Length: 133
View 1: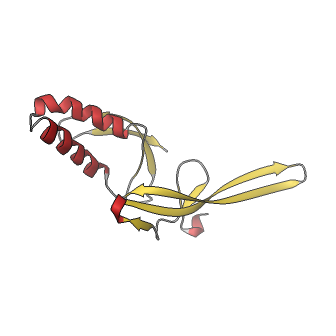
View 2: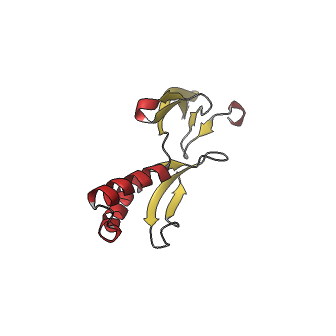
View 3: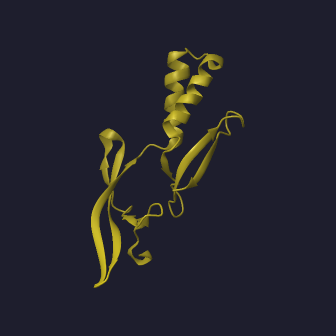
C-alpha cells in the first residue's frame, strides 16, 4: 500500500488520496476520495472486499477555529471582558474539540483524537492531549 501514495487514517484499512481533493469553498471543506478494505478467510479460500469511501475534511485549522470561538464568545458575548468570558470560551473549545479527529498538516499527515485540552499553561501555550487515531 505504501507504493500507492495514499494515506491511511487510523488503524482501520481506510486509504485516501490527499493529492487531489475536491474543494467545497462555500463550506470550508475538502472531500478526499478513497477506499476501505476488508479481508475474510473462508474454508474455501480468502476474500478481499474493496469499497469506495470519502472523507470530509475541514480546510480551517484548529487554531483558526479557536480564534473564531474566542471572538464570538469573549469579544461579542462578553464585550471583551476576558475574566467573565474566558471560562465559557474554554468550555466551548473543549466541547467542540474533545473526541474529534485532527490531522497534523505536516510530514506524513498523521491523525489524532483530541482527548483533553489544558488551558493552564498560559494564553499562548494551550496544550492538546492527543492519542493516535
